[in-house]
Amino acid sequence: MAKMKAAIFVEPGRIVLDDKPMPDVGPLDALMRVTTTTICGTDVHILKGEYPVAKGLTIGHEPVGVIEKLGSAVKGYKEGQRVIAGAITPSGWSNACLCGFCAQDGAGTTHGWKPMGGWKFGNTIDGCQAEYVLVPDAMANLAPVPDELTDEQVLMCPDIMSTGFGGVESAGIRIGDTVAVFAQGPIGLCATAGAKLSGASVVIGVDRLPERLAMARRMGADHVIDASRVDPVEEIMRLTNGRGVDASIEALGTQQTFEACLRVLRPGGTLSSLGVYATDLKIPLGAFTAGLGDHRIITTLCPGGKERMRRLMSVIEAQRVDLGAMVTHRFKLDDIEAAYELFSHQRDGVLKVAITP
Image 1: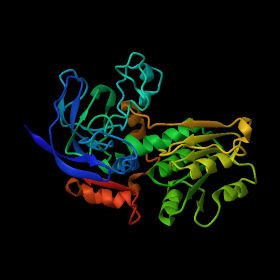
Image 2: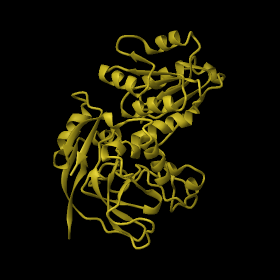
Image 3: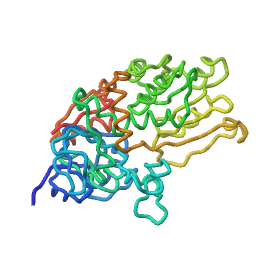
């Protein structure tokens, strides 16, 4: 049986590179030869045991590659074609998908809904930190990459760009809005870029690391706040003359940032939550105006599917945004354990790593 290299979850604290059998290709599947992938903050949650997955699972959900083999029923693609697939790989036909909630895809259930059911790579099926990855429902998920774009230019599309932009879309940001984005990691930076692209006249980026605040400026932030030096809530209220922001975007997943996002909202404002939380959240009574402030709290899981990927690549191709600058480190797949060591400890100014064969 043919083998391939893959980054495998062994136990909390251990993801190792090992050999696995090549996957079998079903009628609706496609086998992708991975040319570039990356590590996500969610992968670190898995590494730490904060999000449970099966032992032996291949991790990773952000693939760029080439079609190696097509299932017998897959039409409209050809082997050797450059493609990406989203971190969310919906079936395209479940009740959730037909209602526009592909990330909650419940294909195979009696009612068609499953919380986070669209997130399969590196969660419920083998992911893409490997030489090859099996893409389910290929006709719903494979998006051809324009010849003009490099792997690194589209590497953010499968997850962090879709997630960050999704948080902006969920917030309903309009032309002339004032927006605060708490945490300028990769997803927060994409939210900052997306808010500017959506017409926000003032975008405020909050973080504690100077290099991330500098990147936030590059992504379109009009103001940056170093939360290690000043109280970001007080500073945002000062910048808005006590009004508060139209929308706040939480991109870290902590009680502190969630609460700060709520405290800076104007009455009737929207808190768009993108962070992955590891503990229960508490809503402070005052910031919530005792439930009478007409606030809206909304969550978003990375939108997926081939049309979403096409749209994101179109934004990049049109040079509306350049996210390639977020790739700060590069590793070979053979060195992925070292990549995890760097990324999980957030050393050396790392934002995103590019992993190639």
